[in-house]
Length: 105
Length: 425
Image 1 (spheres, each protein chain N blue to C red):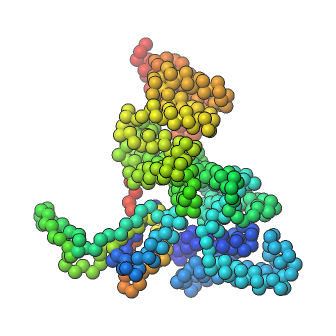
Image 2: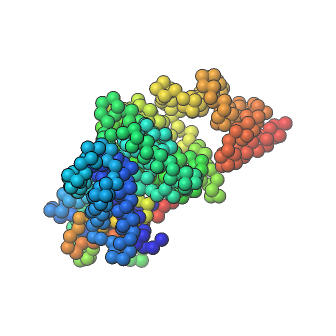
Image 3: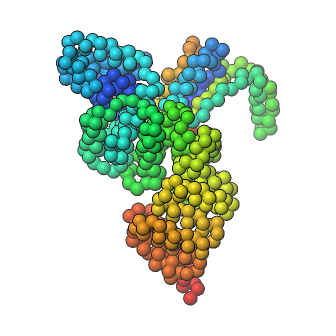
């Protein structure tokens, strides 16, 4: 089964190296299918819909507490395994990681 | 299973390989290393449900295994094959071994994991022993799970694993990464084991359904691991590519009622595009490493030809024939010859295909005993309009296969043939 592991907030300059090492450990264990880091929301856009009509707002958006900073897609054998991998991420402070199972066809 | 036990299982899956590899570096005996690691797991199963999962479960397991190793050594029960002098001077040396273990456990290196894989896939073992040991030591699967996957009694599988460990120990197989000419052969053995695990899951000859899917996924994981550990080996990349490309079709291989859907009839929109992409990238890497003409790379290139075609009709069969020609030269086998004949039939028409099949059977007498031989002949004869001959071949194929799903497929083809035959009469 596949899981989307999302890191809220991207890595900082000082945590980037540790993050890379973490990704490397996922890769060495053979569980990493894909990973990406995202640009901060200041360069992004939000498309909100009113009655089905889209309105585009350029970033940064109205303070939203948690924003996706990067993600990993893992192939593992259980939800617990995905969680165990997520627990090994080198985060500090008040950061968070979310683990969601990917629906298979 | 309780929440804690599921977590322990997950931790075991993540940590066990490195744990066993680190211990084996010191003990030089994979069997002993695995037992010490198992002891640590038993300890965790005792303690964690009471005290909770430790913050660093990997380190906890390593410490438990070290303690256990030193205990066993103190009691003089541990056999250290490569250090018989140590065993003789146990009093003096036990502390030093304890320290070595501690140090090894603190700094597991990738090479240890690689050594463990090479040892589990050592040619001194029977192939089924290699498979079982690999799934146990590197896959982190339990004996029960492996037994269920291969539909053998648990006891048989347990014996298979103990026998493999004993063989390694008795043959004094060194815990090392082979070098030079030996490396190539040993890599071949590892890749064979991984591909056999994949095929056991993918071609579904026995075992429980979900466990077989787990086997294919595990083979893919092992392949990705190896690609990291042996980045210069083109055939590792090629095997990863082959497995990714084959399993990208999984969702399209079954119809609504679970019936098998043959390759040309598959709904190509169900193929997993991300997986195909990964497969193509791995194939490109293999080719860039200069291994484009090696066996797995050729098989992956054939699979890639199929995947690139938007419809079955658009398949570049001429190129596939060429790739099979190359494969047949380096890997002359009846199956390759038969597959080549099928490709010739698609590229040059059923008459040329039939000639190629019969030439293949003349070159490889073993083909006559293989159900796909009459099945392919029947298909080509049908296309040539030689319906009664075709029927005989399909009937023969049905009698030769034990696989239920294939029997069903062949039976439906027979029915088709009979309808056409009657319609024509």
